[in-house]
Length: 146
Image 1 (cartoon, rainbow, N blue to C red):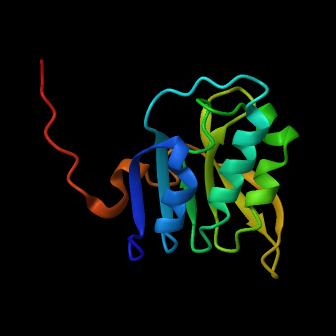
Image 2 (cartoon, rainbow, N blue to C red):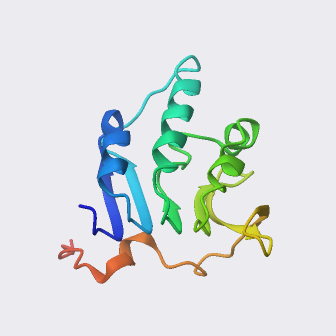
Image 3 (cartoon, helix red, strand yellow):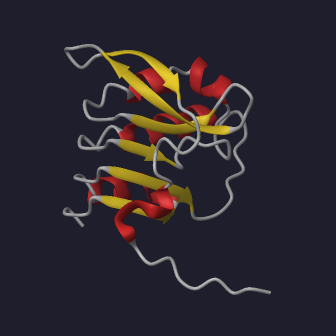
C-alpha cells in the first residue's frame, strides 16, 4: 500500500506498527482501534511509546485523527507525556484530532516557525478541517432510514 494517501478506518492495535510501516506515504490518517481498548495504568507508557513510534514512521503525514482520541488518551495524558510535542516533529504534520481540556475531541493546528519547528498549537473551530469520512471522496455506502 505504499501509494495510499488517505486512510479512514479500523486498525488492529496490536499490529499498529506493521500497519503504519505499510503506508509510509499516507498524508491523512484516521485510524480507530478495531476493538474497544481497555488499558490499565501500567500498560499506558508502553502504548504511548508504541503509538508515537508508529506515527513517527509517517514522514508525509499532514492530518492525524483517531489514534490520539479520548478512547485512548485524555488531554492531560497527552500533555504530561509530551506526545503532541514529540509528534509535532513530523515536518509535514499540520493537524491533530485530540481531546481538548474539556475532554471533547477537537482539531489542533500545529503552529510552525519559518524553519518548520513547532512553536505552539491552536484549537480550531468545528468545520475548519474536513471530516475524515470525506477524505478521498470514497462512497460511504447506503444509509437505511428507519
